Image (cartoon, rainbow, N blue to C red):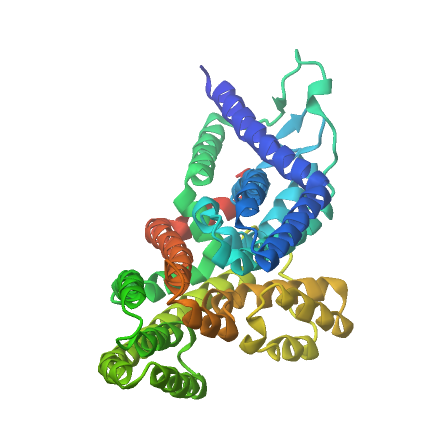
Amino acid sequence: MDIRTQLQDRLTEYVEDTLRYIKTVRDFCDQEEEWSSERKAEIKKMSDINENQQEEKLDAVLADTLMGLKKLEDFLDAVEKLTVTSRHVFSEQIFLLRGESPESLQSVIIAAGTDAHLLIHFKRNAETFFRPILQNVNVLVFQLDCYVLNAEQLCRRIRQSSFSSGDISKHKMDQPLVQLILTASENTMNEMLHHLNQLCDIRKDQNTRLAFLFQENAQKFIDVFSEPRRSRMWQFLSDLEETAVKLNEMKKGASISTVAGSSVGIVGGLLFIVSLLFAPGTAGVSLGLTLAGLGLGGISGVNSLVTGVTEMAVNSHQEHNAQSYLKSYQDDMREILYCLQEAANGAVGVMGGAAAVVKHKSTNVIAAATEITVTGLDDTPQVAINLSKVGQLAKAETLLITKIVRVASDILNALFIGVDVVLLIKESISLAKASESEVSQLIRSRAVLWKSELDTWEEIHKSLCIGIKTISESKDTLEKPFLP
């Protein structure tokens, strides 16, 4: 096979794959409004389930959600591959494309690369995160709403490209898809074939693709999610699971002997859990619960009080440790999420000539978004309502980006504060009557989400450590003109 035939065959493969990715992107964008409407309906159902405590319906709703996210996954994969597609290959000076002009593909490639950094927001295992656990519904609603916002932004950019909707299959199949019209020497075509092989390898390598999404933030994430932070966070989750087990054991013991200080012991255990969920920054609340606990303990009588004081001495030590551990865990998680947010919202398109990412156009918008404090996040769906009020300060596009930035960063608060203090107090009173500790269930539920996030970050860290080694060379290959 001569070099010209090899070049045409390889070029045809590259173009066919590109067209397939573009079709996947275009098909999803054409159905994006319907897809978003379905997800919003599921958000409404999940909110109703949370309010009415209809746990048996959650599994069915999330089954639909996961199917919808599978469709989204195909779209995201196609956008990611277009991000590392060389627009320089598509030139009418090199080949003719049946049904399209090569230049018509460049706009959608550029559009995909411009907002591709938003794909970082979706780097999460949907099956492990969106589990049907009633205690986590608010967080699931929160995250699904983030996905809808980011999908809307991506599709908006794609729709602005000038790619036509022609169907190549309508043309005669006896005509070649790619017709090489280049007149060049054998050495030049050999060089182009080598370049094309490199481009194909770049697009197939998921580690390289991820490094392209992170850009200059790749090394920062590697540094942030490194030792001893990783081991410390995993150890905390292990300790948290052990705490949940001990709380259940305490509950069983209290059910057997409600006279021997069970009330104070349970409240002491509750204080431990409240410390885990709300420290730091809740010293006043913790003090109030401590006093309330002593009051409840007194009702059980002198024997109960003596037993309770003993338990409180132990729990006081646990509480102090728990506050320290959780503060460390929150600080670690905050650093990681901040790094991810910076990469997802601060990078620019990787392809040459791509437009810069739209930045915040109004300092008032930033200030207004910042004023939405974490204390308003007990009911996480309310975040979207609060953020919508910011729309009075900016144009629609700026508002959308502001909401995406804010909602992404507030996932930390949703993961930690998606619990009502009143609910915890109510559950502490009912512990002696219940067959199982519901607060323990709550701990386990949050641990599922935190573990899912840590697993994802481990995968990202591993992938970036590989992809960053060749990112510089890959950038040069993508930016290099295809025609020497």
